[in-house]
Image 1: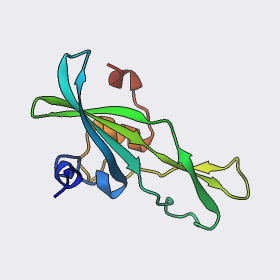
Image 2 (image 1 turned 90 degrees about the horizontal axis):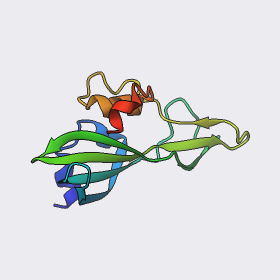
Image 3 (image 1 turned 90 degrees about the vertical axis):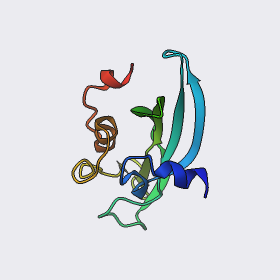
Length: 129
C-alpha cells in the first residue's frame, strides 16, 4: 500500500473524485513553530460536463492555492491545489474551468476547501493567516 492510498483515508470525502495526490511532504511551519503536512493535489484531466472534448484543450493550470485543513495527529495540514483550465480551440479567448458548486452538499469538506472549489472566494483573508 502506498502513501497515496493511506493519506486518501484522511482527506475530505469525495475530493479524490476530482483531484489526484501528486506529492506529500512533511515540513516545519515557521510561523507556528510546528510540523505540518503539505498535500499537493492536481485536478484530473476531465473536461467539465456539458462541453465537447473535441472543441476544448487542456491549457495548464491556474495559480496553485494553499488551503489549511484540520490538523492531523497535532500537525497542520495544508492542501496545495492546482485547478485545471481548458481553452476553446477555435477561440482562444474562451477559457472554462470545472464547476464545483455542487460539492458542499452531500460531501463533507472543510469550509475552506468547499469555498475554493466553488470559486466563491468567501472572505479570503481568513485563509491567509
